[in-house]
Amino acid sequence: MRIIADTGRCVGAGQCVLTEPALFDQSEDDGTIIVLNGTPQGELVEKAWEAVHVCPAQALSLEE
Image (cartoon, rainbow, N blue to C red; front, side, top):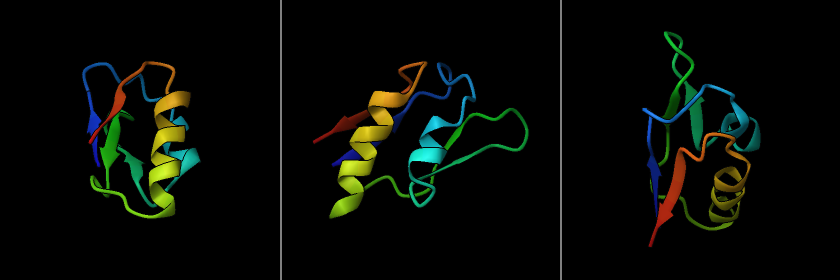
């Protein structure tokens, strides 16, 4: 499983970071997403799916 982040779509809402700070952060410059762990495993996979679903800009996706 791999996290795909489209920084061009990201609006900097920070919902991904709030969902799982071990996977995501935000750029200090513009607030866009930074993926800290692009290949989550175990319980982090569930958190990655949750972040995909709560992203208001639909800037996140998961690839198997």
